Length: 184
Length: 77
Image 1 (cartoon, each protein chain N blue to C red):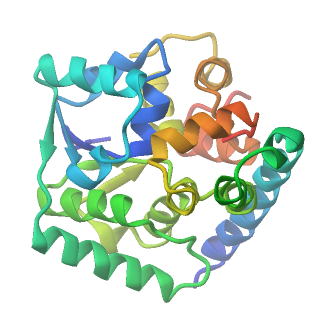
Image 2 (cartoon, chains in turn green, yellow; image 1 turned 180 degrees about the vertical axis):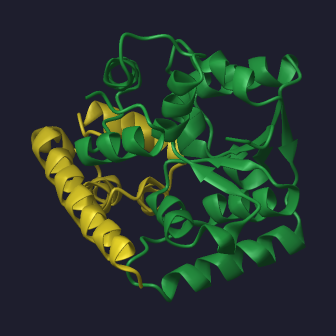
């Protein structure tokens, strides 16, 4: 799978990954990342701020300043998603992430189900952006050997334990199938 | 919409149900009851919807600050 080398990080993703001991594996998948300004405003406790500082110091990450055209595009995405009652709400910071990722062809890393489902239903609408949650990134890390574990389920369990984020078991199975790493 | 997409939508409904139930069961309701009204309502909104940004805004907090309350309340993400 050919994956864009740039990512756009959403607040929930940053908060979760700041708690994970293997968080720096992110930069073995992506060479560079953006945090949009509205996302940065949602980060205010010491742990996630320290991780952002480390990633910025290492040159992996920078802030994408707010801009009128990206925010207009984000608003359009939010309104479009509301027209489909099956898609959970897309919140403004996540929509900004998608608008930016569409502009530059990047992977949005988010836990917002609205964005993830909008992408799953009609990927072409958000192209060239790719939208992944942590579970998909874990699957990619496992499938490519970046994260070593006895099984994908074991890696997910380790992540859930450290981060205090629980995934739906149904989603774990679905994502494992999607990445071809389902245990027989 | 194709059948596979319909199946996916059904799957999502089941996932939402599973996660909502997990949030309800894991929550420390005694702690939640002790919170100031604005924050308490926000936590209840989070338990029902799983939408952390909206809940944080209702509480008047950043997502990061609200997440700390979620963890104290024992609610699964």
